[in-house]
Length: 124
Image 1 (cartoon, rainbow, N blue to C red):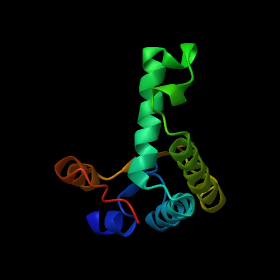
Image 2 (tube, rainbow, N blue to C red):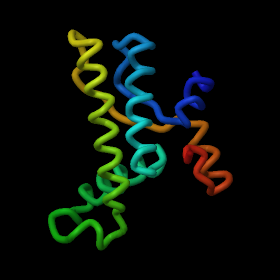
Image 3 (cartoon, rainbow, N blue to C red):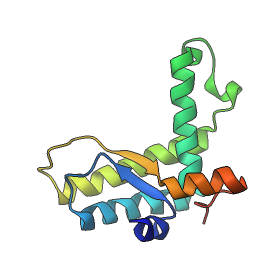
Image 4 (spheres, helix red, strand yellow):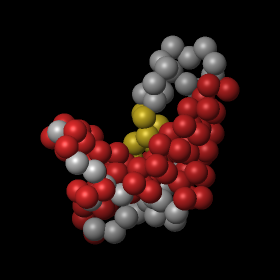
């Protein structure tokens, strides 16, 4: 699996085990193309999403503008657009799939490299 992950620079689709590998690959490629067009790495998109979720858990979103607390909105929006692109591919090519949900993820090897080097291995 790591060979495919590296092809997509660590971008993974989660919660799509019921989708054929070739459809997952096309959906992943579509999501990566959106991120590349926006100049956002898979890791940057996921960090933005995790930051948003953490802010929500802490109640920050109820009280204040998340941008004031370090949320990179361009990265978040790029991740959301990439997610939508992947979802559209799956809806088109696997319209009867059992699981209606998917999530963008980053491969463990990419996270480990980032932790070790502090360099983003998912950047183009």
